Image (cartoon, rainbow, N blue to C red; front, side, top):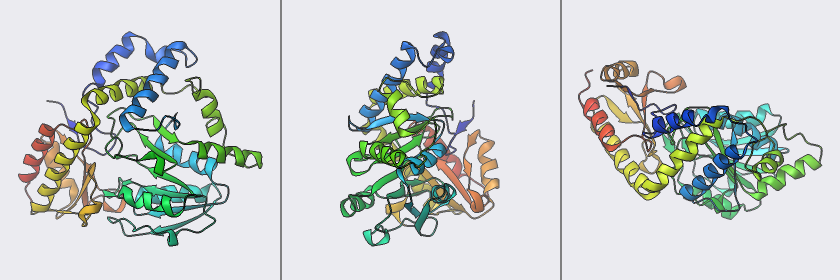
Amino acid sequence: MKNIFFTPGPSALYFTAEEHLKKAFKEQVPSISHRSKQFEKIYAEAVSNLKALLNIPEDYHIFFTGSATEIWERIIENCVSRHSFHYVNGAFSQRFYETAQELGRKATAVTVAAGTCANPSADDIPEDAELVAFTHNETSTGAMQPLEDIYKIRQARPHQLIAVDAVSSIPYPEIDYRQIDTAFFSVQKGFGLPAGLGVWIVNDRCIEKSRQLASEGISIGSYHTLPSLLSKGQKNQTPETPNVLNLYLLAKVSDDMLHKGIAQIRRETDYKAALLQHTVEQHPLLSAFVKEKKYQSKTVVVAETGIESSRIIEQLKQQQLIIGSGYGDYKQKHIRIANFPTHSKEQIEMLVDNLTGLKG
């Protein structure tokens, strides 16, 4: 029996990925030029499948980068000349905020306790902030911001750009992309692929903002500026030699998900999340870190542990069930369990059975 990875990224490979990988090598995909017709077909297929799967408007753009971490930088460089505003509730939302500061922008934030989400208000946000950054799913703590909270800010502040970090939640959330300007994720989580590919969704307002900054003499980066990504993307190409193999796998796995149906994926995610949360709540050694149910993530379940988390992780590892430790200061205090489309109901039920049998 192989290990089953419930770690929140990298996580288990999507169950069709191995066969697609074999086919990719047979077709020599890793060796093709990123200026070839074969690559253009792969790019177009990936974009088309993602737009269909996630219901992304046709006039929004999808670009590919090295990681979601890179996209933090690219958003700030291309969409903020002076001031960004951030809702911070954990390590990754904090890191996005710090990235803006490191790039020389004035970044301000509302920070709430880990394991909670802010109750966003237009009164929080300075008038001169050009961009409002949300983390939809805080991977470090398992707190998920309700989408309605984000949409509320769009209605109150329509002139400000809204960026959404959905790194560990997509493809689960049914995002109304018309209510935001940019979102991004990485493929080693919800899409069950090897790390090394970030996916950046942007609208024309972001493109125009980057052009405005460039016209004012403000640096918007180098090879991965929005204008350069758009220029190449319109030809189904990238500015640089990208991770062609991973892009091919993304095109194929997103097609598999389309055939399964996003509604079915969401129903299964809800069922598995409810099972995991119930197990955590009833367990003598575990308790939910996110107390308010409306903020509990459906894709990354985080539990406080009554003993050192490494002891729980080791017991499960002996059964070849690999879960994540707590993040940062919570390393020995939490366990984190991914609930991505690749994790079948049967696998989650097996994990639950083993969690129930844990010894102190």
